[in-house]
Amino acid sequence: MDWDTVTSRLNQMLAEGKTAQLRGALRMLNRVDVAQYLSGLDTDKMLLVFRLLPSSIASDVFSYMDDEQREKLIFSIGDREISRLIDDMFIDDAVDFLEDMPQDLVTRVLANVSPDTRDTINRFLKYPENSAGSIMTVEYCAFPGRLTVDEAMDEIKRTGLDKETVNTLYVIDENGILTGTVPLRKLICASEDATLSSIMETVFVSVHTLDDREQVAATVQKYDLLAVPVTDREGRMVGIITLDDIMDVVQEETTEDIEMMSALTPSDDTYLNTGIWDLVKNRLPWLAIMLVASIFTGLIISHYEGLLSGAALVGVALTACIPMLMDTGGNCGQQSSTLIIRSLATGEIAPSDALKVLWKESRVALLVSVVLALVCFGIQYLLFARPLDVTLVISGSMILAVMFSKVLGGLLPLGAKALGLDPALTATPLITTMADTCSLLILFAIASAALL
Image (tube, rainbow, N blue to C red; front, side):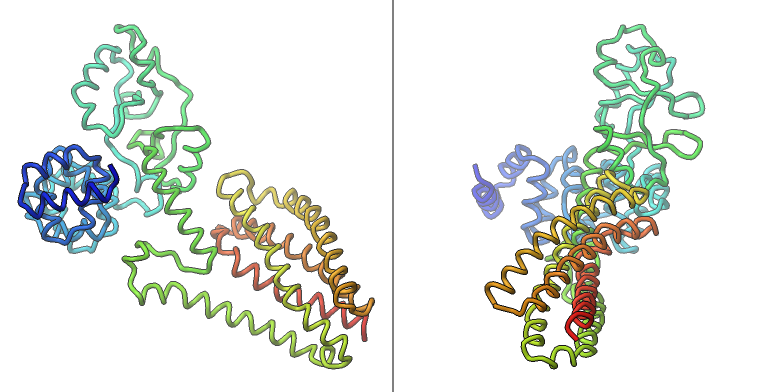
Protein backbone atom coordinates (compact mmCIF):
# COMPACT_ATOMS: atom_id res chain seq x y z
CA MET A 1 0.00 0.00 0.00
CA ASP A 2 1.47 3.36 -1.01
CA TRP A 3 1.94 6.17 1.47
CA ASP A 4 -0.71 8.46 -0.09
CA THR A 5 -3.35 5.76 0.42
CA VAL A 6 -2.25 5.23 4.03
CA THR A 7 -2.39 8.96 4.72
CA SER A 8 -5.81 9.26 3.11
CA ARG A 9 -7.25 6.47 5.28
CA LEU A 10 -5.75 7.91 8.45
CA ASN A 11 -7.16 11.34 7.61
CA GLN A 12 -10.56 9.80 6.99
CA MET A 13 -10.55 8.10 10.41
CA LEU A 14 -9.48 11.38 12.00
CA ALA A 15 -12.20 13.37 10.23
CA GLU A 16 -14.88 10.84 11.21
CA GLY A 17 -13.76 10.77 14.83
CA LYS A 18 -12.90 7.06 14.78
CA THR A 19 -10.20 7.46 17.39
CA ALA A 20 -10.08 3.78 18.40
CA GLN A 21 -9.52 2.66 14.80
CA LEU A 22 -7.00 5.46 14.26
CA ARG A 23 -5.09 4.44 17.37
CA GLY A 24 -4.96 0.84 16.18
CA ALA A 25 -3.84 1.86 12.70
CA LEU A 26 -1.08 4.04 14.10
CA ARG A 27 0.21 1.18 16.25
CA MET A 28 0.62 -0.90 13.10
CA LEU A 29 2.84 1.71 11.45
CA ASN A 30 6.56 2.18 11.88
CA ARG A 31 7.46 4.96 14.31
CA VAL A 32 9.13 6.91 11.51
CA ASP A 33 5.96 6.74 9.39
CA VAL A 34 3.85 7.95 12.31
CA ALA A 35 6.18 10.93 12.74
CA GLN A 36 5.90 11.65 9.02
CA TYR A 37 2.11 11.55 9.23
CA LEU A 38 2.08 13.94 12.19
CA SER A 39 4.29 16.40 10.31
CA GLY A 40 1.52 16.89 7.75
CA LEU A 41 -1.12 17.88 10.32
CA ASP A 42 -1.88 21.27 11.79
CA THR A 43 -1.06 21.82 15.47
CA ASP A 44 -4.48 20.94 16.90
CA LYS A 45 -4.84 17.71 14.92
CA MET A 46 -1.21 16.78 15.57
CA LEU A 47 -1.77 17.15 19.31
CA LEU A 48 -4.95 15.06 19.15
CA VAL A 49 -3.30 12.24 17.21
CA PHE A 50 -0.14 12.31 19.33
CA ARG A 51 -2.20 11.85 22.49
CA LEU A 52 -3.77 8.75 20.95
CA LEU A 53 -0.37 7.06 20.80
CA PRO A 54 0.45 4.54 23.54
CA SER A 55 3.09 5.87 25.91
CA SER A 56 5.34 2.99 24.90
CA ILE A 57 5.82 4.42 21.40
CA ALA A 58 5.07 8.14 21.89
CA SER A 59 8.65 9.01 22.87
CA ASP A 60 10.03 7.13 19.85
CA VAL A 61 7.69 8.96 17.50
CA PHE A 62 8.60 12.28 19.13
CA SER A 63 12.31 11.66 18.52
CA TYR A 64 11.65 11.22 14.78
CA MET A 65 9.60 14.41 14.38
CA ASP A 66 11.27 17.52 12.97
CA ASP A 67 12.28 20.35 15.32
CA GLU A 68 9.45 22.67 14.31
CA GLN A 69 6.77 20.06 15.02
CA ARG A 70 8.37 19.04 18.31
CA GLU A 71 8.53 22.64 19.45
CA LYS A 72 4.84 23.15 18.66
CA LEU A 73 3.97 19.96 20.49
CA ILE A 74 5.93 20.86 23.63
CA PHE A 75 4.24 24.26 23.79
CA SER A 76 0.84 22.59 23.47
CA ILE A 77 1.03 19.81 26.08
CA GLY A 78 1.01 19.97 29.85
CA ASP A 79 3.93 19.76 32.24
CA ARG A 80 3.10 16.22 33.31
CA GLU A 81 3.07 15.07 29.69
CA ILE A 82 6.43 16.74 29.10
CA SER A 83 7.89 14.95 32.11
CA ARG A 84 6.66 11.54 30.97
CA LEU A 85 7.72 12.13 27.36
CA ILE A 86 11.29 13.25 28.06
CA ASP A 87 11.85 10.66 30.78
CA ASP A 88 10.84 7.92 28.32
CA MET A 89 13.22 9.13 25.61
CA PHE A 90 16.78 7.93 25.20
CA ILE A 91 19.10 10.57 26.59
CA ASP A 92 20.89 11.25 23.30
CA ASP A 93 17.55 11.89 21.56
CA ALA A 94 16.46 14.24 24.35
CA VAL A 95 19.74 16.15 24.17
CA ASP A 96 19.55 16.42 20.36
CA PHE A 97 16.08 17.87 20.70
CA LEU A 98 16.96 20.40 23.41
CA GLU A 99 20.15 21.61 21.70
CA ASP A 100 18.15 23.28 18.94
CA MET A 101 15.29 24.62 21.04
CA PRO A 102 14.76 28.16 22.45
CA GLN A 103 16.08 28.71 25.96
CA ASP A 104 12.62 29.24 27.49
CA LEU A 105 11.46 25.89 26.15
CA VAL A 106 14.61 24.15 27.42
CA THR A 107 14.05 25.67 30.86
CA ARG A 108 10.45 24.47 30.91
CA VAL A 109 11.39 20.95 29.85
CA LEU A 110 14.19 20.61 32.40
CA ALA A 111 11.89 21.88 35.14
CA ASN A 112 9.47 19.03 34.46
CA VAL A 113 11.74 15.99 34.26
CA SER A 114 13.10 13.81 37.01
CA PRO A 115 16.20 15.08 38.85
CA ASP A 116 18.33 12.24 37.47
CA THR A 117 17.27 12.96 33.90
CA ARG A 118 17.83 16.69 34.41
CA ASP A 119 21.35 16.17 35.76
CA THR A 120 22.23 13.84 32.89
CA ILE A 121 20.87 16.20 30.22
CA ASN A 122 22.68 19.18 31.76
CA ARG A 123 25.92 17.22 31.76
CA PHE A 124 25.49 16.37 28.08
CA LEU A 125 24.64 19.96 27.16
CA LYS A 126 27.98 21.10 28.60
CA TYR A 127 29.96 19.11 26.05
CA PRO A 128 31.16 21.02 22.95
CA GLU A 129 28.55 20.94 20.20
CA ASN A 130 30.53 18.81 17.75
CA SER A 131 32.16 16.50 20.27
CA ALA A 132 31.62 12.80 20.88
CA GLY A 133 30.17 13.60 24.30
CA SER A 134 27.36 15.64 22.78
CA ILE A 135 26.00 12.73 20.69
CA MET A 136 26.60 9.77 23.01
CA THR A 137 23.96 7.98 25.09
CA VAL A 138 24.22 6.54 28.59
CA GLU A 139 21.78 3.69 27.96
CA TYR A 140 24.20 0.79 27.48
CA CYS A 141 25.05 -2.53 29.14
CA ALA A 142 28.10 -2.29 31.41
CA PHE A 143 28.96 -5.02 33.93
CA PRO A 144 31.86 -5.85 36.26
CA GLY A 145 34.11 -8.63 35.03
CA ARG A 146 33.33 -10.89 37.99
CA LEU A 147 29.74 -11.47 36.80
CA THR A 148 29.01 -14.84 35.29
CA VAL A 149 27.38 -15.28 31.91
CA ASP A 150 24.18 -16.45 33.59
CA GLU A 151 24.07 -13.37 35.85
CA ALA A 152 24.73 -11.06 32.92
CA MET A 153 21.93 -12.65 30.88
CA ASP A 154 19.51 -12.17 33.78
CA GLU A 155 20.47 -8.50 34.03
CA ILE A 156 20.03 -7.99 30.28
CA LYS A 157 16.55 -9.54 30.45
CA ARG A 158 15.67 -7.22 33.33
CA THR A 159 16.96 -3.94 31.90
CA GLY A 160 17.61 -4.58 28.21
CA LEU A 161 14.47 -2.88 26.93
CA ASP A 162 15.68 0.40 28.42
CA LYS A 163 19.05 0.21 26.68
CA GLU A 164 19.94 1.77 23.32
CA THR A 165 21.48 -1.56 22.28
CA VAL A 166 22.42 -4.90 23.82
CA ASN A 167 24.54 -6.12 20.92
CA THR A 168 27.71 -5.50 22.91
CA LEU A 169 28.38 -5.71 26.65
CA TYR A 170 31.05 -3.49 28.14
CA VAL A 171 33.17 -4.81 31.01
CA ILE A 172 34.35 -2.26 33.57
CA ASP A 173 36.44 -2.50 36.74
CA GLU A 174 35.58 -1.14 40.18
CA ASN A 175 36.63 2.37 39.08
CA GLY A 176 34.44 2.35 35.98
CA ILE A 177 37.40 1.98 33.62
CA LEU A 178 36.58 0.09 30.43
CA THR A 179 38.59 -3.14 30.35
CA GLY A 180 36.93 -5.17 27.60
CA THR A 181 33.90 -5.94 25.48
CA VAL A 182 31.71 -9.01 25.02
CA PRO A 183 29.62 -9.39 21.84
CA LEU A 184 26.14 -10.73 22.55
CA ARG A 185 26.65 -13.74 20.32
CA LYS A 186 29.74 -14.70 22.31
CA LEU A 187 27.83 -14.32 25.56
CA ILE A 188 25.02 -16.57 24.33
CA CYS A 189 27.44 -19.28 23.22
CA ALA A 190 29.60 -19.20 26.37
CA SER A 191 29.27 -21.46 29.40
CA GLU A 192 26.79 -20.14 31.95
CA ASP A 193 29.27 -20.22 34.82
CA ALA A 194 32.07 -18.47 32.89
CA THR A 195 32.90 -14.96 34.07
CA LEU A 196 32.74 -11.98 31.74
CA SER A 197 36.43 -11.23 32.33
CA SER A 198 37.33 -14.70 31.06
CA ILE A 199 35.49 -14.29 27.74
CA MET A 200 35.84 -10.56 27.09
CA GLU A 201 37.84 -9.14 24.21
CA THR A 202 40.59 -6.91 25.58
CA VAL A 203 41.46 -5.37 22.21
CA PHE A 204 38.73 -2.87 21.44
CA VAL A 205 38.14 0.51 19.83
CA SER A 206 36.96 3.49 21.86
CA VAL A 207 36.76 7.28 21.54
CA HIS A 208 37.04 10.15 24.00
CA THR A 209 34.31 12.56 25.03
CA LEU A 210 36.06 15.55 23.43
CA ASP A 211 36.90 13.85 20.13
CA ASP A 212 35.38 15.60 17.11
CA ARG A 213 32.28 13.81 15.90
CA GLU A 214 33.64 13.61 12.35
CA GLN A 215 36.64 11.74 13.74
CA VAL A 216 34.25 9.41 15.59
CA ALA A 217 32.30 8.79 12.38
CA ALA A 218 35.55 7.94 10.58
CA THR A 219 36.46 5.52 13.38
CA VAL A 220 33.11 3.75 13.20
CA GLN A 221 33.39 3.48 9.43
CA LYS A 222 36.99 2.24 9.56
CA TYR A 223 36.27 -0.57 12.01
CA ASP A 224 32.70 -1.38 10.82
CA LEU A 225 31.22 -0.83 14.28
CA LEU A 226 27.56 -0.80 15.26
CA ALA A 227 28.41 1.15 18.40
CA VAL A 228 31.58 2.63 19.87
CA PRO A 229 32.25 3.18 23.60
CA VAL A 230 33.08 6.68 24.86
CA THR A 231 35.54 7.20 27.70
CA ASP A 232 36.79 10.20 29.65
CA ARG A 233 40.41 11.20 30.04
CA GLU A 234 40.94 8.61 32.79
CA GLY A 235 39.54 5.81 30.65
CA ARG A 236 36.25 5.57 32.55
CA MET A 237 33.34 4.60 30.37
CA VAL A 238 30.68 7.30 30.18
CA GLY A 239 28.56 6.35 27.16
CA ILE A 240 28.28 4.84 23.71
CA ILE A 241 27.62 6.24 20.25
CA THR A 242 25.44 4.08 18.03
CA LEU A 243 25.35 3.76 14.26
CA ASP A 244 22.10 5.72 13.87
CA ASP A 245 23.72 8.77 15.48
CA ILE A 246 26.79 8.34 13.27
CA MET A 247 24.56 8.33 10.19
CA ASP A 248 23.03 11.61 11.35
CA VAL A 249 26.52 13.07 11.74
CA VAL A 250 27.56 11.93 8.27
CA GLN A 251 24.41 13.40 6.73
CA GLU A 252 24.84 16.73 8.53
CA GLU A 253 28.53 17.00 7.68
CA THR A 254 27.94 16.04 4.05
CA THR A 255 25.18 18.64 3.75
CA GLU A 256 27.45 21.24 5.35
CA ASP A 257 30.29 20.42 2.95
CA ILE A 258 27.99 20.62 -0.07
CA GLU A 259 26.72 24.02 1.07
CA MET A 260 30.22 25.34 1.70
CA MET A 261 31.47 24.00 -1.64
CA SER A 262 28.66 25.97 -3.28
CA ALA A 263 29.55 29.18 -1.44
CA LEU A 264 26.71 28.97 1.08
CA THR A 265 26.91 29.49 4.81
CA PRO A 266 25.61 26.22 6.34
CA SER A 267 22.07 26.35 7.73
CA ASP A 268 20.87 24.48 10.81
CA ASP A 269 17.36 24.07 9.44
CA THR A 270 15.74 22.50 6.41
CA TYR A 271 15.23 24.54 3.24
CA LEU A 272 11.46 24.99 3.63
CA ASN A 273 11.82 25.90 7.32
CA THR A 274 14.56 28.48 6.68
CA GLY A 275 13.34 32.05 6.43
CA ILE A 276 13.93 34.28 3.41
CA TRP A 277 16.24 36.63 5.30
CA ASP A 278 18.26 33.71 6.64
CA LEU A 279 18.72 32.38 3.10
CA VAL A 280 19.82 35.83 1.97
CA LYS A 281 22.33 36.10 4.84
CA ASN A 282 23.68 32.65 4.03
CA ARG A 283 24.27 33.49 0.37
CA LEU A 284 25.04 37.19 0.12
CA PRO A 285 28.45 37.38 1.89
CA TRP A 286 30.02 34.74 -0.35
CA LEU A 287 28.52 36.30 -3.48
CA ALA A 288 29.90 39.68 -2.44
CA ILE A 289 33.37 38.20 -1.85
CA MET A 290 33.37 36.53 -5.27
CA LEU A 291 32.11 39.75 -6.86
CA VAL A 292 35.07 41.64 -5.42
CA ALA A 293 37.43 38.84 -6.50
CA SER A 294 36.07 38.94 -10.04
CA ILE A 295 36.96 42.64 -10.24
CA PHE A 296 40.60 41.56 -10.38
CA THR A 297 39.80 39.66 -13.56
CA GLY A 298 38.49 42.84 -15.10
CA LEU A 299 41.56 44.76 -13.93
CA ILE A 300 43.83 42.23 -15.63
CA ILE A 301 41.94 42.59 -18.90
CA SER A 302 42.04 46.38 -18.59
CA HIS A 303 45.77 46.27 -17.91
CA TYR A 304 46.38 44.39 -21.17
CA GLU A 305 43.91 46.49 -23.16
CA GLY A 306 46.69 47.60 -25.48
CA LEU A 307 47.50 44.00 -26.37
CA LEU A 308 43.84 43.24 -27.11
CA SER A 309 43.28 46.35 -29.21
CA GLY A 310 46.66 46.49 -30.94
CA ALA A 311 46.51 44.06 -33.85
CA ALA A 312 42.95 43.30 -34.87
CA LEU A 313 43.42 39.59 -35.54
CA VAL A 314 45.46 39.05 -32.38
CA GLY A 315 43.05 41.02 -30.22
CA VAL A 316 39.98 39.17 -31.53
CA ALA A 317 41.67 35.78 -31.12
CA LEU A 318 42.85 36.45 -27.57
CA THR A 319 39.51 37.95 -26.53
CA ALA A 320 37.59 35.01 -27.99
CA CYS A 321 39.70 32.43 -26.15
CA ILE A 322 39.42 34.06 -22.71
CA PRO A 323 36.14 32.31 -21.72
CA MET A 324 37.44 28.96 -22.97
CA LEU A 325 40.68 29.27 -21.04
CA MET A 326 39.05 30.48 -17.82
CA ASP A 327 36.31 27.84 -17.88
CA THR A 328 38.74 25.02 -18.60
CA GLY A 329 41.09 26.10 -15.83
CA GLY A 330 38.23 26.41 -13.34
CA ASN A 331 36.78 23.03 -14.28
CA CYS A 332 40.17 21.33 -13.94
CA GLY A 333 40.75 22.85 -10.52
CA GLN A 334 37.25 21.86 -9.41
CA GLN A 335 37.83 18.24 -10.45
CA SER A 336 41.02 17.96 -8.40
CA SER A 337 39.62 19.72 -5.34
CA THR A 338 36.52 17.52 -5.30
CA LEU A 339 38.61 14.34 -5.28
CA ILE A 340 41.00 15.62 -2.61
CA ILE A 341 38.22 16.92 -0.34
CA ARG A 342 36.46 13.57 -0.61
CA SER A 343 39.67 11.69 0.16
CA LEU A 344 40.31 13.91 3.18
CA ALA A 345 36.78 13.29 4.45
CA THR A 346 37.16 9.51 4.20
CA GLY A 347 40.62 9.51 5.75
CA GLU A 348 42.35 8.18 2.62
CA ILE A 349 44.86 11.01 2.64
CA ALA A 350 46.18 13.60 5.11
CA PRO A 351 48.04 16.93 4.83
CA SER A 352 51.28 14.96 5.25
CA ASP A 353 50.58 13.40 1.83
CA ALA A 354 50.98 16.76 0.09
CA LEU A 355 54.08 15.71 -1.88
CA LYS A 356 52.38 12.52 -3.06
CA VAL A 357 49.34 14.54 -4.17
CA LEU A 358 51.58 17.08 -5.90
CA TRP A 359 53.42 14.33 -7.78
CA LYS A 360 50.24 12.57 -8.87
CA GLU A 361 48.31 15.72 -9.82
CA SER A 362 51.30 17.06 -11.75
CA ARG A 363 51.44 13.95 -13.92
CA VAL A 364 47.68 13.92 -14.42
CA ALA A 365 47.73 17.63 -15.22
CA LEU A 366 50.51 17.20 -17.77
CA LEU A 367 48.67 14.48 -19.68
CA VAL A 368 45.32 16.26 -19.53
CA SER A 369 46.77 19.63 -20.50
CA VAL A 370 48.63 18.24 -23.51
CA VAL A 371 45.49 16.56 -24.84
CA LEU A 372 43.38 19.69 -24.28
CA ALA A 373 46.07 21.84 -25.86
CA LEU A 374 46.09 19.64 -28.99
CA VAL A 375 42.31 19.91 -29.23
CA CYS A 376 42.59 23.65 -28.74
CA PHE A 377 45.29 23.89 -31.43
CA GLY A 378 43.12 22.01 -33.91
CA ILE A 379 40.11 24.21 -33.26
CA GLN A 380 42.00 27.51 -33.36
CA TYR A 381 44.32 26.76 -36.29
CA LEU A 382 42.25 24.49 -38.53
CA LEU A 383 38.67 25.53 -37.78
CA PHE A 384 39.08 29.25 -37.05
CA ALA A 385 42.21 29.74 -39.18
CA ARG A 386 44.05 31.70 -36.49
CA PRO A 387 47.65 32.69 -37.21
CA LEU A 388 50.12 30.02 -36.16
CA ASP A 389 51.89 32.18 -33.58
CA VAL A 390 48.57 33.15 -31.95
CA THR A 391 47.44 29.51 -31.93
CA LEU A 392 50.66 28.42 -30.27
CA VAL A 393 50.25 31.12 -27.60
CA ILE A 394 46.70 30.01 -26.82
CA SER A 395 47.64 26.32 -26.77
CA GLY A 396 50.68 26.94 -24.59
CA SER A 397 48.56 29.01 -22.22
CA MET A 398 46.11 26.11 -22.05
CA ILE A 399 48.87 23.73 -20.92
CA LEU A 400 50.12 26.01 -18.16
CA ALA A 401 46.62 27.06 -17.01
CA VAL A 402 45.40 23.47 -16.73
CA MET A 403 48.54 22.32 -14.92
CA PHE A 404 48.38 25.21 -12.47
CA SER A 405 44.65 24.75 -11.81
CA LYS A 406 44.92 21.01 -11.18
CA VAL A 407 47.86 21.37 -8.82
CA LEU A 408 46.10 24.24 -7.04
CA GLY A 409 42.93 22.19 -6.71
CA GLY A 410 44.91 19.33 -5.21
CA LEU A 411 47.02 21.28 -2.73
CA LEU A 412 44.64 24.02 -1.52
CA PRO A 413 42.31 21.64 0.43
CA LEU A 414 45.36 19.99 2.02
CA GLY A 415 46.61 23.39 3.13
CA ALA A 416 43.24 24.26 4.62
CA LYS A 417 43.17 20.96 6.51
CA ALA A 418 46.67 21.55 7.85
CA LEU A 419 45.57 24.96 9.17
CA GLY A 420 42.56 23.42 10.91
CA LEU A 421 40.05 24.83 8.41
CA ASP A 422 37.31 22.94 6.62
CA PRO A 423 38.71 21.85 3.21
CA ALA A 424 35.28 22.47 1.69
CA LEU A 425 35.96 26.20 2.11
CA THR A 426 38.53 25.95 -0.68
CA ALA A 427 36.20 24.25 -3.11
CA THR A 428 34.44 25.44 -6.23
CA PRO A 429 34.04 29.23 -5.74
CA LEU A 430 37.53 29.95 -4.37
CA ILE A 431 39.44 27.64 -6.67
CA THR A 432 37.44 28.72 -9.72
CA THR A 433 38.10 32.39 -8.98
CA MET A 434 41.82 31.80 -8.45
CA ALA A 435 42.06 29.63 -11.57
CA ASP A 436 40.29 32.27 -13.65
CA THR A 437 42.65 34.99 -12.50
CA CYS A 438 45.80 32.93 -13.00
CA SER A 439 44.64 31.67 -16.41
CA LEU A 440 44.33 35.26 -17.61
CA LEU A 441 47.74 36.19 -16.21
CA ILE A 442 49.31 33.19 -17.95
CA LEU A 443 47.64 34.03 -21.27
CA PHE A 444 48.61 37.69 -21.28
CA ALA A 445 52.13 37.04 -20.01
CA ILE A 446 52.83 34.58 -22.81
CA ALA A 447 51.07 36.74 -25.40
CA SER A 448 53.03 39.83 -24.34
CA ALA A 449 56.31 37.97 -24.63
CA ALA A 450 55.56 36.20 -27.93
CA LEU A 451 53.37 38.59 -29.90
CA LEU A 452 54.62 42.10 -29.07
